Amino acid sequence: MKANQEIISLDEAVTLAGLFNERTRRTPDRIAYRYFDPDQAVWKESSWSEMRRETARWQAAFQQEGLKRGDRVGIMMPNRREWVMFDQAALGLGLVSVPLFYNDRGGNVAYIAEASAIKLLVIFGREQWQSLAPVRDELATIHRIISIESLDGMEHDDRIRQLDEWLPKMAGEYQIVDDIDPHSLCSIVYTSGTTGHPKGVMLSHHNILSNTYQALQTTTVNDDDILLSFLPLSHMLERTGGYYLPLMAGITVAYARSILLLAEDLLIIRPTFMISVPRIYERIYAKIQEGLDEKPAIVRKLFNLAVSVGWKRFECLQGRRSWSPWLLLWPLLDRLVANQITGKLGGRLRTAISGGAPLPPDVARTFLALGVPVLQGYGLTETSPVLAVNRIDDNIPESVGRALPGTQLATADNGELLARGDAVMLGFWNNPQETARVIDENGWFHTGDVARIDATGHVYITGRIKDIIVLANGEKVSPADMEIAIAMDALFEQVLVIGEGRPFLAALIVPQTEHWRNLAEGLGLDPDDPTAMRDKKVLDQVYRRIGDQLREFPGYAQIRKVVLLGEAWSVENGYLTPTLKTKRKLIIEHCDSFIREIYNGH
Image (cartoon, rainbow, N blue to C red; front, side, top):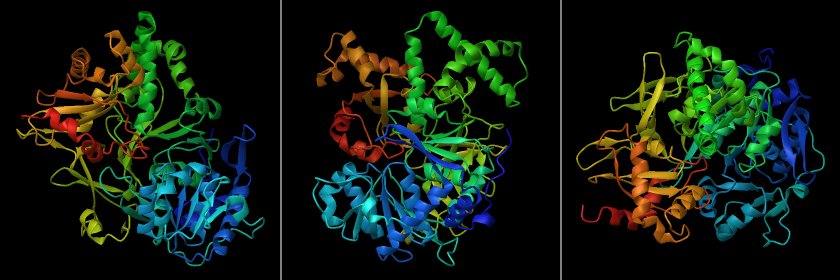
């Protein structure tokens, strides 16, 4: 298998529209996208030449709407080919795309639409239209709404058009308007924001294009690679890594049907490349552990032996450990154990990126030991987004890797990670004060994350400046580290550690449904009775299990009080971002009465 010779250089592309133009010209017959057609219940394929023709139809439709260069257009739909058509049509005409999470709440969409003065919005269908129902009168800047699916039978709005009716039957060639400056604004990406209103991150063609090219220099892609796309394209991790990177490299993207069907899609698509957030890996890991709990002791011992030997093998391949006779067992353990795990991921993964949040070390170690090539990386929307990533032959899973080529990373006196390079945003939309706060006079972007950089250049994220909890006695705690450790117990689905300015730490915990039922029934309690979550027998078990997970933490970093919650935090109810990060401030506000009860008298 030879390395991919089809990577398009920055000089050849110049802009993101130029990248699409060059890709569709260079490899017109290569398969660009695979997708599932629910009407015919079959997987289908689109070539680059087909994508070019269809995108030209979108451009003609945009022009019929009288949109002018610089106008903002929004998109609110799941990952699919039409997302790319919309984006590339807009980019070629000099329009500014504003991606919205496909399942976002109406109030958030209304805020973004007004703040960025969106003129046209593309939605997928009924679900999005219903979410916008309470705020339709607030979408005053939008003069046209395009729905991919039919909205027949739903409340009418003169602005609505169905895609098939809106697109012209035929169109001319895909076009790029004259003199698009690669450093000009091409997209406003609103941060999902764990606090307050989201901020509009202004990104240029060159920001994203350079980041894509730099990211490609850290890995090897092949002509026959296929990437399974399932993170939302509204988020820059998937947009850069799962859309522009394959476009630049000429590799195929398959769109997963849904997160619920991800396990099945992995077996069908058998991807060689995957980008995910830690929560997906954590769920797979939890299922493995649950399965082992039900197996005989000999099976558990065999699994643990495979992880132990596999880790020795991984460290040996990385050049950090000498050869050991134990490695002679690997071919057998690979066949009996590791292949069972890698097979569930399709059996062909060569690169599995994890980003968006810290990957628990035990999870990373297990996957790497069993032959799943997990590479942890780091970035932010404001940096297009990738700043650092591990490499296949230089992978320290506790770190987020080394800086991308052309990116400078440093730490400030307070430990904050600073970044400088071509991928750093133009600034925040209509917010020069906030821009000046995060980009200093020397061009350093202040990430808000605390980090250390070792002598080899590997970056270790140790916390968030704002999220560090300072207890009443002055001790400082990173809640993220504790939350990750506690959540390694399968009983605890979601965890939020609190205690800022308080005499001790406490935790708000959402238990995993099945494990909660088993625990409650085992103690003779009704799992559907809300009072069961406050029963002393339950809490005794919870405190013991939390204590087991926090054994390695210092004495002051222990949980003294716990509240179990019956409602999970989700994107839909507003307590998780689209990349599944907890919105700490909102959850704390929502649980104010519980928190006051925890600390009553202290």
